[in-house]
Length: 336
Ligand SMILES: C=CC1=C(C)c2cc3[nH]c(cc4nc(cc5[nH]c(cc1n2)c(C)c5CCC(=O)O)C(CCC(=O)O)=C4C)c(C)c3C=C
Ligand SMILES: [Fe+2]
Ligand SMILES: [Fe+2]
Image (cartoon, rainbow, N blue to C red):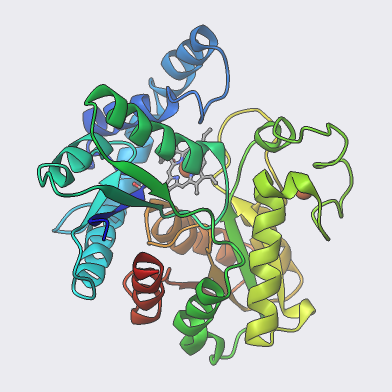
């Protein structure tokens, strides 16, 4: 039988919540051509002239508000997930970050120290397809394998946005919150520039051409982030028995001047408060582990926006993190 190891891959955080560390992290992250999809010189100019002079300080401040004694929430929670999965499996399990540490290079080299490993089952921890998450993680793993001539087969778990096991785990981990009383739930997904989606539509006539283009089936949906988040929402609502008027979809974390997917989460929070909602709950299914974007952007800043507009309470529904239902799903995927 093939001897296999598991490598979970998440996005990554700065090494520390200070301005120089955040500057290094943002430089690595935003100079990735899959993230800012512009020619190198233009990307270099935008990152150096418009992002690095101011954003590292502001982001460091945001990171400080959620940093834990053990480190960045994203890294700490990813590590917990890895440990919970390792406890269920007789195979080596490692966790790597696309940006920062522990790097994909470091972890693939660690795995292949055991010369009997023949295959790495690679799990990018993103339910939905995007070049800025899934593709870049896979390409980085391939680069490392080629660079070090590693003698392993890389098998990749594809985006699992409508996988029934994933949906069931998401509903199970959310259930205690669904039982509370609330006015509305926002499914807040990380946003994307619209061009990241339209450029992958080989027909050139489908993606984002109409409001309802993401419904039904179309070959372009294999790489359509918007379709995939709509499917997750639809499957979740069906499984949890959520009525249509009790939830909506919005997109967070917009950056820069390009046109991003909408509606924007902050605008949605304001609208809901102005329509009289007092208690909103926010679920962020684009992330499987809590991170800056959930703990700071939604639970701290989102709550401020909601309250300033007249709302009373915002509840962030935690990501699946190391919930046993999710760990069991991952363990099944690893064994089959
Ligand atoms: C053009 C910029 C960005 C794209 C495209 C993008 C896509 C994208 N990101 C995630 C998941 C995460 N992003 C996180 C932080 C973060 N994202 C961007 C920019 C883009 N993301 C920046 C600049 C940052 C850093 C923080 C900041 O300065 O705002 C994180 C959290 C990291 C952490 O340490 O906690 C996650 C997770 C997805 C899923 C996605 C595309 C679908
Ligand atoms: Fe991001
Ligand atoms: Fe679409």
